[in-house]
Length: 227
Image (cartoon, rainbow, N blue to C red; front, side, top):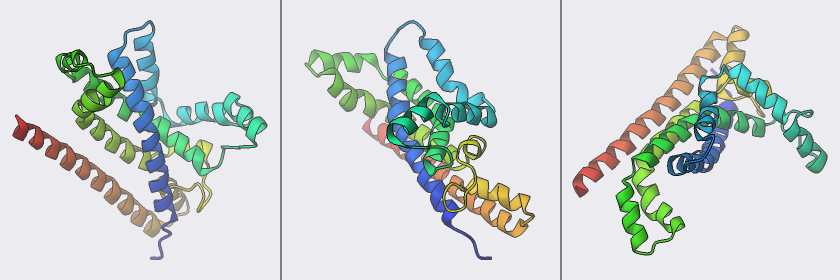
């Protein structure tokens, strides 16, 4: 069967960008909440975790209200720069990033909380700055949990559907990701195409999960060898 590969490439691009965004935001906020005590800390944690439990259509509606032409962010972008995010692949990136954010944030926070504070304090006594301490001590010690979260978030972003279809729609070659292409094939009664796309999506996600298990296993083996 002639299979349109554009949905796969678009899904990989969207998932890649979404994971890169979450690498910065998820790790940053995970470190902040793990290392700082401030009023509303747990409320912020709850808000950051909401995309994991909210129905995808509800999440998509919130995003549509935010980035739509009448939303606060969408109206500002359109008035200031002439940018309309809705029904673009960038909107699909935003939807995938928001939906998969908790899968990076939660493991990152847990990983930072597990870092031995005595090691960080020892580095401080040697005159290491806080920025250098984070990149040379804290981050390397927490990297295993962060890496696992990033790979899981990539797999989640690959399969994002509900929020994506609400803010990006289903435009073949432009916003039609793999999960949306599967839905369209099923709706059209094209079982052959749907089966092929489902198999392709499953193989990609299984490969990512196996890679995550392999990388984490190697890191655990390396830690045992050092010990």
